[in-house]
Length: 403
Image (cartoon, rainbow, N blue to C red; front, side):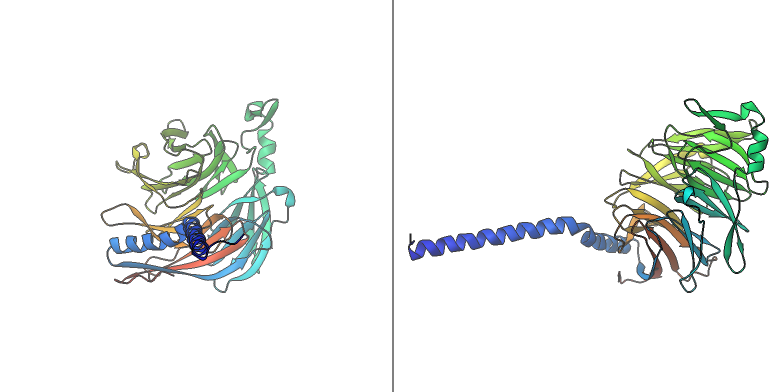
């Protein structure tokens, strides 16, 4: 059947308009999905200008690939060695030339490495198998296992006294000095080391004597993160959604709970304190970063909620504080850099993209005071098995040129 010419033209025009509208809707939909990338740049530029004349630029210096995937933990030692945990393996890179120098922990049964910490002479690694392993560096830069914590000697000594055993689950007992689930975090503070675990507890260790001093039942669910301020205040974050604040009671000679912070709506995954220990940052699966602050003479029981930082579109997995900046890594595959304004709260200054999977860990190269020249180096490790090393430069300028 043939249609009149005018009607045919009318139908053709209608079809063309419909196609244009459909493409327009598809374009809008794509912009909605990719929108955060574009909006982030605009928001960060605006926040830079609102902070006065400060300009922050960033670029990726290099990308390192691990032998295994994913990257579960990063740590920097002496500002020149980068330790990257991938599955049960720890890989060491020289940051001066970004070369691989060692791989250690050839113990598949240990499970994945959850955390890495250092003191002057030793390296401590926390593992899925509930153990803490202690290493030393021998020449030329090779790592050798010294012992595990708790040591065999201490376990043998404690096992002779029945009261040293505690119930860890039905019909099962274990020495109180032992973790009974994955060790999720380590913090070294002078001669003490603090370990957090999915067994709902944290423990305090005397490093020089290689013994456990105290075990604290901290939460009703797994402890995901631990942070310790310079004066010894302990913060623990849990899958139960709570942050708890602990201080040592010298009379009782043990740590006591002084405050519970309940603001997150789901699991709290990351904690970090700022340089002077007055500000605490927490990141959760509810997409938020909360800022907490001690208000009265640095007392732990005066910690109050200050503000919430929003911008990530998925769970926050890691946080670090470097100089006056806060860095956050997320399941949304980005790293955000935040800074506090002179007369306002924290603002997102930079969003760093490039990872193909969630950003699981962050580490910073901390330079001596006055030696940074406004440049901060941040390392990000992802579940894609890649480590990116970023340089973030701060300068006073009216122009903003984010890369």
